Image (cartoon, rainbow, N blue to C red; front, side, top):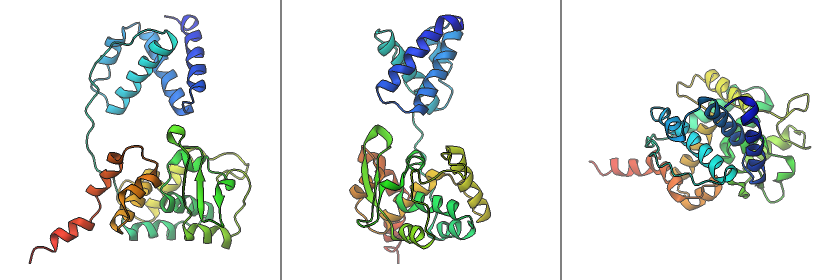
Length: 263
């Protein structure tokens, strides 16, 4: 199929994804997948087979992109039942308290330090951070109202006193988006990733550190401090408690209790 033939399908796909509230990231991934699918001239089954040796994430993206196209655009049943790759149960990477504080200490750029502190002291996702507005902060009630979230499910989280102190002490700008460049352009994902990566390098942390590492650390440290896992679930915005329970495997609170049983 040539570009003139499949372009109308891509346009319709884009429109349908937006109408149903899918994120721009998902839209981009689905459009890219379908464009490759059209030019491959393969059946859905044969095209999926190309991804069975890829990562679980890649296979899932292709599978659901094809499924969405056939069901929502062509209005056809998508009967393919190729099993998705099994998920590897890798435990999340977590920084200790000393490493977290070191990240803050080595980051002299105030705005960059603010990025790091918000990621850790609120546990929010990268996309939630990028879309955060000053109007979402309630400094009198010490809360942050997250409105652009995964699954479009708004939630209210606590505003940590250290975040509040940073804002008040340095009189940070309080208009529109929280994170934007000097040219008033919205930060992108890569900018935040580089801020975290460079801070970890300066702090001489050997672990692989990403924005999500700070979210993992936030949840793990709360659990180790005795917080109820259901409260942590709400703060993280997890739909299923099973997703949050992974932190019980990296928290060392219960591990230490077991160690103390040995005399």
